[in-house]
Length: 267
Image (spheres, rainbow, N blue to C red):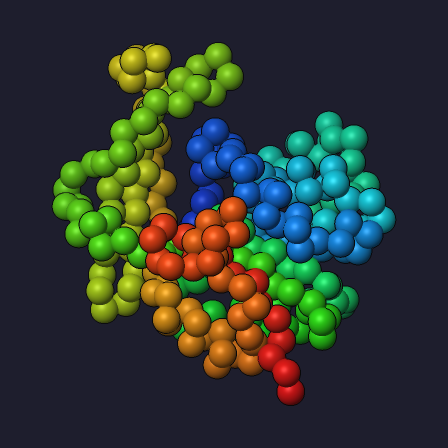
């Protein structure tokens, strides 16, 4: 599937810059949580797989099952395919370029996972409905949908857009790069526009001569806790579990995460 026809769509613009992705989003401490709900003898559908942060470790645990790994970004899937080429479990991964709002794999799954707050990139209500309806179409009657979304924190939403925050220096192979961000939150639409700024630098964060600054602009739709609960019920699903963190602590709203286990509602 070519991405060319998507280029005028807001969803297309998210996460096209894959160069720094693995170093920033390489944390795999959530993997034991997802594994609790996976039967390794059955196929799993992973939505928004990115460069394989979750895909590759999950594939190492699969026995008879295969990870169907779908992502909208050809740039991310290119990185994933590079990793698959060197994997001892390449036969356990089936990468797919596709749109979570509109795809048809012609099969159903016991488990569908969409991690790393990827649902926050769905900006429009009508698109959120399409996503969940599509998930339901690919879900066995006794299957589970596992996902996490951000729990909005007001101090973050009140930042000055003209300032940059959260400066950090990250090692990338034998090099270093810095990352900082700015954001602007629009209350009417619940859209948080975030700009990430990357610069190659030394270990102390001093910019390296001859390298230009990289910038990536994304938009994040924020869902408040009661709001997402209401969407799930409206869409014919039920909440089997909701958690604060990947330790499985029941949701109290004290963290920046909302982690859900949902299934089809009883008819």
